[in-house]
Length: 506
Image 1 (cartoon, rainbow, N blue to C red):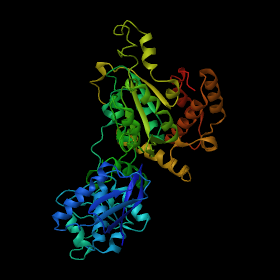
Image 2: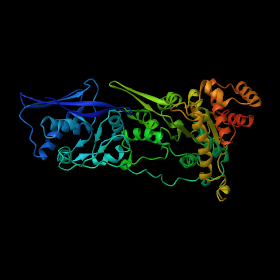
Image 3: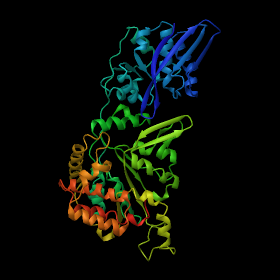
Image 4: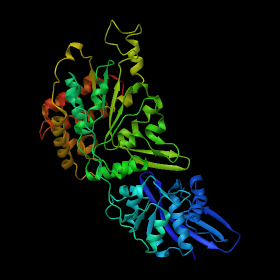
């Protein structure tokens, strides 16, 4: 008779249920695993054999066949060890077959029977709950999986504890959810001397999830400004925290099962590969844009990133999701993030300083910023020139509002947007508004419409640029507490756009 247990195979943030069928039949002794296993899954038979031997359970001299169904779904990872061992224990009548079939399990086995933590416990618990089953996972992964209330989670430390639990010798208590990770002290905006226009743009970007590029000489404070954006962002909603944590679970970034309510802030180096930024590699893992989902992706030295990496950002910025296509996998990841980019105006960085600029100025600036294509530049809602700060200003006390004051305004604006787009599903910020909905919520008054029309004609704005100005104007109005988009809101939004419109973006 065939014994059954269940586990999952990961396709992006989705965990697909996999049935583990185990049969012990007469024939030449052997242990085979079928159903498109990768190398790690195929090697599970040796780890399972050694772990059972550590429990003084000898495999019979019969043919053992383990089938992972559906057979046409690729199976990757070491988390198949525990469900294979559980199915085999059920086939040998060591544990009750009905108990094994009522559980989704995942975990890696060491040779002495200890259970090692694996990635993906949180999405696995979601799938188990949807299928009406419990979850069995390593002890270190239990606090992460226990965040799914509808799924009872049992988290043993060893395979021996699994046997004792299912046979009733020592029943394990359900695992409890890990603690909410507390964000470390955020840096304060008041630390930045001057740069009031850039601070204002940062506030607008945070309030509406807009994309922002900061251009200025080295040392003008671009990275310093971006590093303070986490301090003005509102915390994640419970739904956003669960969605973001599922991605981080697949990347192995959840610390001791704790879920963070702070929005992600990712800052990859400009030498990062396309797979690291977009996603891919072995198993089509999530990239930086997906790890920044519901948060901020900060790309310093933006023109220094490879051209192929920059161009692949264009579609995810528009759609809020990315499809990672490989020969054996097509995986979709969410990536609704706010892009903050920083760039020097030229390679030497001193284009505006005639005394320090290189001999190729101003052509060097055109060549350097030309690495950012027009269509990509057109996707930035806000572009801000960040001038150098005079050394005499550095001794002055901090100016402008502190981060907590700005954060309160941003949170209030986000709350307005949440109510406005409550019926829209995933998109709940002004940056997500489009079509008839955008025209409804962001239509300016007569003076604002006239100003926007003149700006579109004067600066040759693309249709995308026109709509992005409307979105920014709507966010500025929200920060101002205004129900209507008025001429001053449109004027400010246009002022952040006209510099970028010089690129022939389409």
